[in-house]
Figure 1 (cartoon, each protein chain N blue to C red):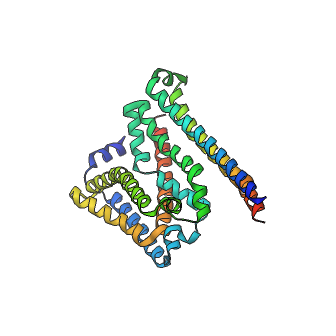
Figure 2 (figure 1 turned 90 degrees about the vertical axis):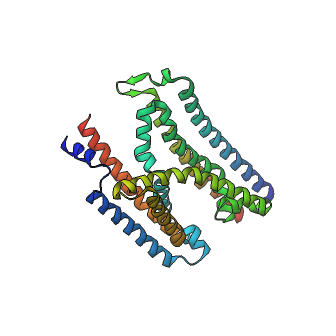
Figure 3 (figure 1 turned 60 degrees about the vertical axis):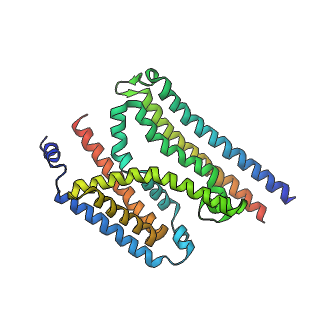
Length: 214
Length: 88
């Protein structure tokens, strides 16, 4: 297996093809963000992409949200090292989505609000609700985002051989730029690009693995 | 009376929402409890190369698609139509 051996010996060293793809992806997504930032003027455009996203596009974007380095690499590794316990992760994230749809989607649409905190604040006292929502959001983000940033930082450190702290700062700046300047339009289209890349990449990888180890 | 019809519709929506949520949660936690307490059952092979655990894991995913489809169908054909009739 010459390809595998070559790849194995090169881990941790700068790889020209991988770096090329990395810069292409960053340039494309920042381009989308720049394009979206010019089209984002109002609150509705920032939070809801001006209601221009079709259900199909939104579905692919949500799939891009759902798929990450974890579903691409992490879960396969978890299942292979811990057995059935690893399956909890592959189903648990998916199961949360329908429950959100059943319980929250309709009230959100009825009230024409943008965030869950907005909806609850309509019925209850504004300040405590928003504080509780902020605490909940930050707690979730801490657990989810830190894992993602550790993964991305580790990847960039391996790819370019730069210090881990610098890699984390670069990833963080890119993440904030996407959302802050591009709003929901940029976030949605970046997720669509990511979903298509991940789905086709995972499909090609699965076929290549099956072709070799069937 | 539009008021009672609206209340009826809200009540039926609540029933559908709760029923689907309970189904989803029961299915997921049933699977988790099996993983926690009955690994020998899950590791039983149905056909060579496919264990019951992997099959059930895939079924949880397929069934959540199915429940989503049920909800979307109900919302589009039943709920939204009833809401439109009330608006007239």
